[in-house]
Image (cartoon, rainbow, N blue to C red; front, side, top):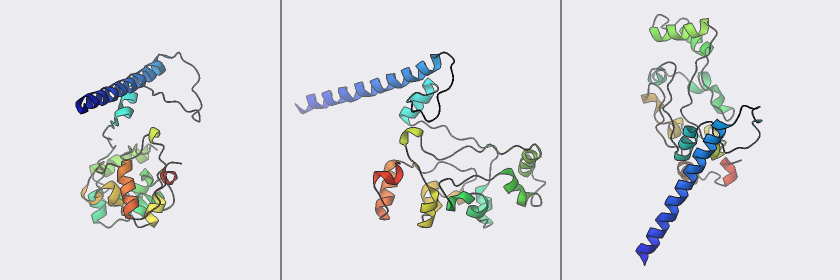
Length: 203
């Protein structure tokens, strides 16, 4: 009897997954096959994705490894006691977005420091062309998660950056070393006796 229930349950689950996958592919395909027309305003909700692969990736949580424009040596800068929240990620204490350093921020120091090194010459070239460094996001939530993360209250509460970003002091290029799942966040909020209602993160 129990084995029959288990088989029935697995059948329902597998069919549900298959239906969701077909729906995701269909939505992606329909979006691709649609005739050219004016883009819908961004305020209009749509479950469609630009491509079938985008739908598949979103459904299964597949995220590409970000490739940065330069191999920024976090380890070196942390070792020199450079205040990352004052110079590189200055928005982190003020609001939701930590921010990424601009070319001008880098060149404040590197116009004079290590200016002859290949990496600094690459950054100087970006500045001379008036082009910003095309940093790629390492962390972040998909749109479908409906999460609005805010850095500032976490910094005010004394949450260490390493809790969510791993030990950046031991990294060169930033890596995704922590899985910022709902369970991870909820567990941390419970441990720190922080607000844990749905509206805390989903609003």
